[in-house]
Image 1 (cartoon, one colour):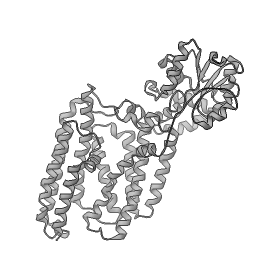
Image 2 (cartoon, rainbow, N blue to C red):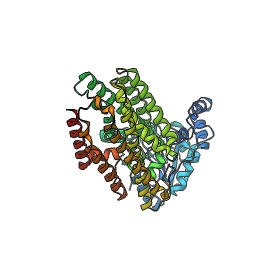
Image 3 (spheres, one colour):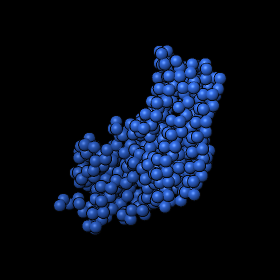
Image 4 (cartoon, rainbow, N blue to C red):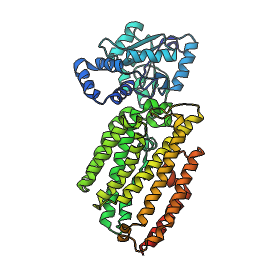
Length: 476
């Protein structure tokens, strides 16, 4: 056993002990409390520097440190070292409040170094503090980033949480005690974070094209494809924002805890930077489309922004908002090809998507009931609301079928269909499909978003094909 094994072991926090960054986590929670704090954060930084800013944020935000994505392999190693009588300290540039909370939660550290009293304990300042207490080469330091190279200059050995490149750089400064590989990012992880599979919802943009019988118009078809791409990029920007703002709630959730930001498999900073880039690309594409489409896209983003910060926590307002967001996709499709919106199409979509939005909440509550939990995380619903939601959701779905029946019996349909009576069986198919998805939900078998479920479910696809056949037949 080498001599440096007996030296005190000092561990960095952000990116090393945890697969996250407490400054960004606390900043996001602060902004979620009140978006106007963004301006105060800039003021705090300019007034007193990073340490002052961190202190002001910590005064206003409590972090649930028990939910953080800890580096389990490193913690297991530290526990072994602790059992062998080795002194272990935590040294972080995070605020003293959060550092103490983490240390108390893990019950692992003998000493805690952190940012306080206007001193941001990072890089050379961390090195000076550790060297002052332990002496040059008197400690082993565990870090994860290039800034930690300044500490390794005077440490007795290095524990590297990172890639081979960082290991090589650290070994030029001191011996390597051990290393831990932590992978973040990658195409697969990014596709999951962007929720590319959810882009299928944006296929609703093509509905007005189909309803107006303009599929053969290549110009209209191209406009719909541009709108689809623009809307998808905007939606992914929103998904990133939602996941960044919902970290604590997602980490408490059975499945959402595996989302990239919650699990720490994707860096928070990359998400903070990617969200506005995607949004900018979405609006850049939108300028090739009619101005009305740009207005709809702005409205969609504003509504989703309001939903992320507040509306999703208000009972029933959240599901009405979700239904509206689905319907806005249809409005966007109409705006992209400059066709008039049909009252019947809007009414049908609002009631159908309200039913599916309620179904989503119903499914979440049913899962909570199975875990004997009384209230949804980040929502205002309680388990006792299950029966009422089932009634409201099923009724809304049936009303959408009624709207379809009234449309088939109206004079408006004659503008597009020669034999509208042939479309009557579509009402029966819709009644069957709405009833079926609600039965699946009642049995606890609805694990996907209802729209995604419909596109994956073979019976749903067959129902859609049957409806399409009757609509085509009614045209001639």
